[in-house]
Length: 164
Ligand SMILES: [Fe+2]
Ligand SMILES: [Fe+2]
Image (tube, rainbow, N blue to C red; front, side):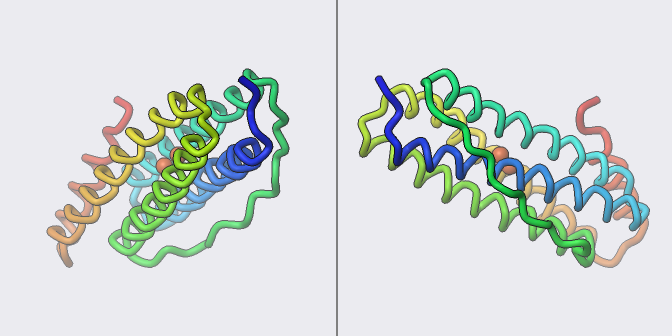
């Protein structure tokens, strides 16, 4: 079945959003390095890499369906993110936006009765549950840390174990 023009445009938009996610996490990683939080810097850096994987999954889907990939400009992410808690609250808000966008895309695939796209997008629906869960867990952990520098350093060390 051929990819509809509407769905193709929506998938291209999502590719751009995944690249922006990658760029955003990379900017956060640089910021966290500058804040002497190497564990969180590593966590966001790994996340940045994962977002590239998401973009490529969609890229491959469009290509495999004989569609046309049109890459768009990636906007500049912010340079500053405030405290670690404020940064992870921004992560959570961002992932909530991405979830809404994935859900819209899935709804478009339902309307188009595009079954291959639905199957592909189911992976993303599940992934977003995980992304929001992880982000809110760190937000809650940072709330518990409060003003304690020692607890912040311990949490940073813990988050730096991601990918090990
Ligand atoms: Fe993503
Ligand atoms: Fe994400």
